[in-house]
Amino acid sequence: MRSHFMRSQGMMDTTRRPSRTRQRLARTCTALLLAVGAAAPAMAQTDPTPFCGDDGVWIQILGGGGPEITDGQASASYVVFQDNAARLLVDTAPGSSAAFDRAGAAFRDLDAIVFTHLHADHAAAFPAFVKGSYFLDRDRPLPVLGPDGDGVYPDTVSFVDRMIGPEGAFAYLSDFLTFRSSGGYKINPRNVPAAGRGLWSGFSSDNLKLAAIPVHHGPVPALAWRVEIGDMTIVFTGDFNNQKDLVADFAQGADALVIHHAIPEGARGTARDLHVTPGQIGRIASQAGVRMVVLGHRMNRTRGLESITRAAIEEHYQGPLIFANDLECWGL
Image 1 (tube, rainbow, N blue to C red):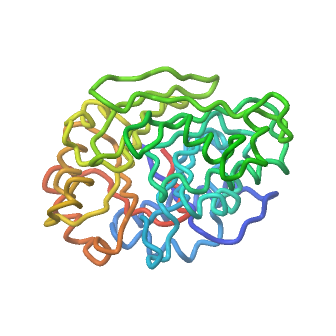
Image 2 (cartoon, rainbow, N blue to C red):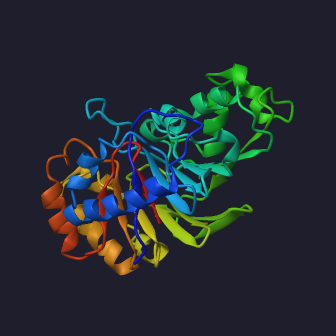
């Protein structure tokens, strides 16, 4: 099994990247952290360098929390690096734009932004990314992909229009939707089917390929995303309760399964209709044969229960298990 590497939160120096010596030390330290399990995220707080490694594919946690404003974490959002270039942004959650900066990511490197769904805790920072990019040097179109709509939930094209369109909340940014963009690039929003059981695979770039499937998140149109980048595969489930029973097949053989841990094992009612339990996470990971599992979207109702969560998951899956925290970075 290949090693997993970590960088955790700290001050940013945009001219500095970790030396090969630091990377070798990180490999050694991370092996020890994985050996002690749930202690890894807590110990990671002492590492002053949030940067991922220079080479290979890395997942950086921009936000490890959920919608609460009492958990000390940004809401769930992720950036995927390849060879030190940020290629994919998954959700634009509150706090993610600041974390993107602290991570040393360059907006010009992004091949796409994808949304798992359009709840505020996953999408609200989108205008902040657009406004911030005005001061940067991006010069190529930016695809923005996300679910189609249903009822009170707009489709992604409509969401973008409501945020930055000519009649939107931030209409002064509407030229970003045109080739006359003051930011130097055009935003191209696109809807992806979020109903039924079909696989969508309508995007690729020189660096990555994307596929998506609908997942059940109560009444909210939602997607899971499969990312093929380099020789690695990552699946981001977003929020879901596995009612459609599609994720295990979709994640088959993935190097990393980034899955949301928003409820404890005994949850019932509305919470259970929206999210998977730890036991379900373990079964999905085992059936999919994934190499590692990253637990994101950690809410207060799950914090302090890590040993119980781990036990429920490990009844089915015995691979590396990571409880995500802000700005941790994991190499594949």
